[in-house]
Image (cartoon, rainbow, N blue to C red; front, top):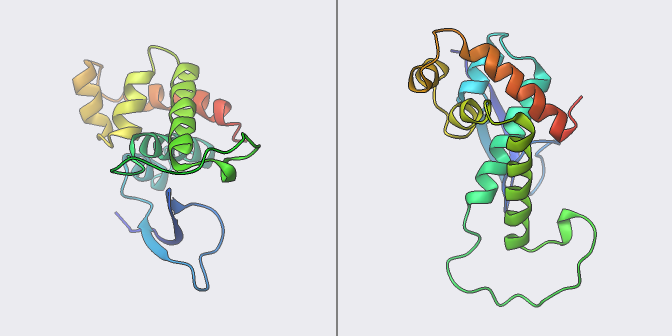
Amino acid sequence: MQRQLVERELTEEGPRSGGNAKGKRRTVTVNLSESPLGWLHSRGHLDDRLFQAGERLRADYERANLGPSVTMRWDPVRARTTGDAELSAMERQVAAKARFDGALAEAGRGLQDVLWRVVCSCEALPDAERSLGWPARSGKLVLKLALDRVADFYRIN
């Protein structure tokens, strides 16, 4: 498999996916073809819309499970404002968890398992099919259906 290395800006929440990472900002090099979704996308099995939906779901999964701090936070209490830029680390974590839960609910009960296994836990598609008791080569179609619903949830065109 050919590596797809991309330079991303490193923020508190992790690597930022958009924009150009130049200047004095801290950056990180990311291999886009490491995940099972990247593998499927690089071989033409997933289009850009489905790949972006899966990456958004995985980013929300990772942000929701990250502990923002080890000790008690003594941040001042602020009035609620619009936009994620004004949120504290804990509020961003709760917002990511709400988005993740909403995306899984939009996918539906029968499709949540394959989404979590392939997108979030980075399990290979044949392994996910075996563990779910599905016939071989059926997971790709089911994963596409699930990612299409997640793309609708995230409003990805």
